[in-house]
Length: 461
Ligand SMILES: Cc1cc2nc3c(=O)[nH]c(=O)nc-3n(C[C@H](O)[C@H](O)[C@H](O)COP(=O)(O)OP(=O)(O)OC[C@H]3O[C@@H](n4cnc5c(N)ncnc54)[C@H](O)[C@@H]3O)c2cc1C
Image 1 (cartoon, rainbow, N blue to C red):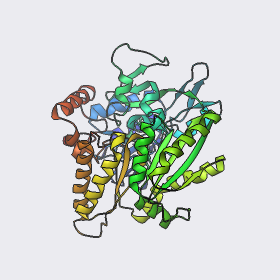
Image 2 (cartoon, helix red, strand yellow; image 1 turned 180 degrees about the horizontal axis):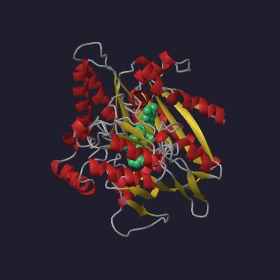
Image 3 (cartoon, rainbow, N blue to C red; image 1 turned 60 degrees about the vertical axis):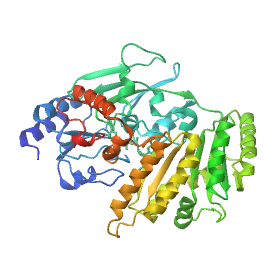
């Protein structure tokens, strides 16, 4: 519980209406997409960087933990207030401050919703590629803090590739600027890249300078259905080996397709045991050539059916199958565990084999889909939590999945981060010396360990 004087100071700083203490309000900010729940003592919605600076100074003085929060769509518990304290809501920072068409750079606040930003720049012929599937809700601040990815990242890269500079509030309350609007800049350490992906543990992001691209003239979507996962996995390798980098190269396995069939009325033939959703973009003439080459490559690999969209509406219909996956899986199993390992793209096939073996070993269905083009597989462990011991088994299966990815030269997380969910496993991937190096940075910048404690490093809990 916070003392009354702290609450009064927060109210003076941000206005009474922006300081929430009712239990019903606190519950709304107690969880994210992991559904792990921890109640904060207070939720504060500041409106200026100076207010955040004052809050951090107060929090340091009184040793109160502070948990930055965007839209709360995180998949690893990054925003949840594991030790009470203050949830710092950043959704009032919701302005697109500038779109500089001369330099293809935008300056925005962190509470801007990802899709709103994309649509706004597209109106002037520009393009912001990173597209997490949560983009209708997620904030740009959350995207930067997690270095979010998405389907288009196979061609265009992830969030950090588009962040040129930041305004931040440090854990001790200083206001700093890192980087700037230039395409190059090598003076001192690259603090922008350090903050990007730091999961709200090193700084609060209050302004973001974003690099933009010209919007591609056109795009073409194709959905290829395979009679087996082997054919689809081989197709991923062969497309990349054929030196084609599509804009997206998404895959859905047989169990995922079964969930989609059960939960929706979308047309997915029974014979399809795996699907690749492939999109290419660029000049219209180039697109036909690319889809033609892709069709040639995949054809010998057990193709059941290929659908190529000729209109935006048809493209939307093909995407609908991919977009319905998360909701379909949750409908079938609301308690599923969702991991997001990433392996070298040529190893997707080997990883799927390993996951099948793990599924058999623990007798738990595992459903796979994801961004095959960059080797990023969403591994969904479908536990039945009514069966005693099932959660423990799932955790062992997750550890095996992580070990399997690491054996293939991969990583435990391609895009969702560590948060609280992967913190117990971090030593599987990172050597002690590396974890110590990271912790040295954290300790130096946040000596009282008040900014998002309990995340990334398990021993900080
Ligand atoms: C259905 C669904 C699909 C998803 N698909 C994808 C996907 O395709 N790719 C992907 O990468 N992720 C995906 N995610 C995960 C999630 O949406 C992303 O991690 C996203 O970037 C989180 O944004 P948010 O605004 O919800 O952040 P939150 O969940 O609120 O916070 C996430 C982290 O960022 C920190 N944070 C938030 N704002 C700030 C700030 N201004 N300053 C400092 N730290 C801050 C928080 O402390 C926390 O550690 C998906 C999630 C869901 C539910």
